[in-house]
Length: 591
Image (cartoon, rainbow, N blue to C red; front, side, top):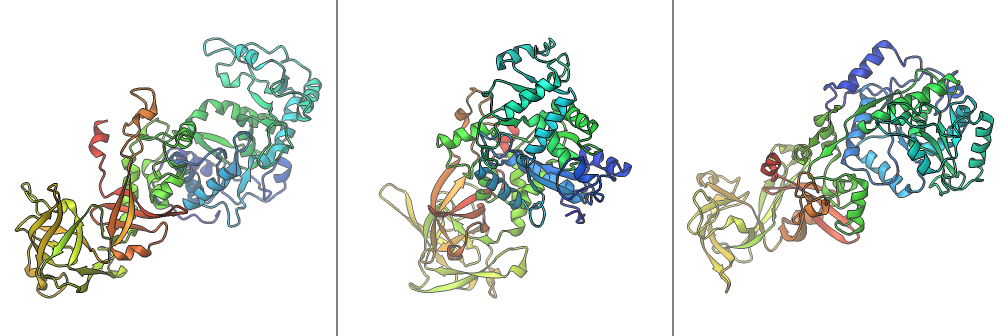
């Protein structure tokens, strides 16, 4: 990875993060860093060779849920920058909160990152866990205590909150703030040894209770929490706070550019304080990592709150975390979205510090653009109506040839059976057509795509007046691709499949999960804006070759959109990924 400097998609587009990296590389800021081959404190690196990675970034999710579309932006950004600059991106799990973390989420996240096209070394050698550093984090905490930079506070949580102050008023010093380092150290070790109940004490950084930045008012860095950790078991009953663990992890891993979203901007002074103190005390090598913030991805018609997504799953509004309507990456994969489309999307929206909301059509357009290149064409009739070719011999069948991709002749052609009875789309017949309607109606002539020209001769209706069959006659010398077929000129072209050989399958037509750009804005309840038409299940007639399609095979169904084969223990069906054109365009622009 360090030597692979091939420019990724969109890398020519600059942004403020790249400008910062360019300046750091030009100045040689990180050129003298050393790397001992694995994360560690100063002693592990000081006599090691120079770091072969020009930069180091990281993607640090908490293993407490499934990744969503917003994470895809961060993944593409961090791994993409490392690739572009000849660096390394670490895959790190910030597993410092044992109550909410599970191995299921770890496995899902690793799978999602690799599905997007990224790796963390040929043998996952850049896959790390914050829990691997618990011993060092504890050692660093004792170091801070010994140097008077941290103290054990025995106030109740309510007292700490009350004495923290507000944006208008400074905080008040804890009555335990001036405990001697030796007393603090003894108490902290008692906390570690399980001699105090949860909530009895916390370890706090000793900074400034009058700071205008509330995050610097002696923030907690360790708390007592008796909980079994998914990797360390019951070894620890104290756990570091994320705001303390985050900078320590970055420094141990030699991260140069710690890229995170804007909600951490106010935490940057504490990030820098922790690293500076530990470096002063000889624990970390310089230069230290730097935190850079960018705006998180917000998308209209979408909710990415883990809490609300969990509610949708638990209360059965969706069929699990991988429901194709969910904004999770496992859901997007089942929907038929592609890694290439996500990477294109990340390049297209770029990065900035300004909050903004992206319309889902931008992501959908990226998927269309990629799928248009890679998806073979097939014919599907989603709302079947019988077409009887009255002058075609009964029992006869012949093959018509259709290209697998109109812009890729090297993909070859496939065979489609033609017979006396066909399925066509119901919308392709109108007994009393409006002006400008060029498809089938009595007396009109159309071409059956890749097949013959036919002339409509009438229709049959049921007792309720509904058309159940359309009759036509075909012209034997009009078969597409045969000499003389160009003699027939028609304004209408419709698609079809042979009724006898058609593959009947379940097709799931997914749409946006919410019908409002900002779910819940009008009523305060996001559930009120669920789209009742977000899923429609139909039985469709498909060309017979689709019967052999396998899970995750993608196709363009001509005239309809892009579809993917979905398969599970419950069966096999076809899922619509996106329509050929944005069907929400008018509503999105008005919103």
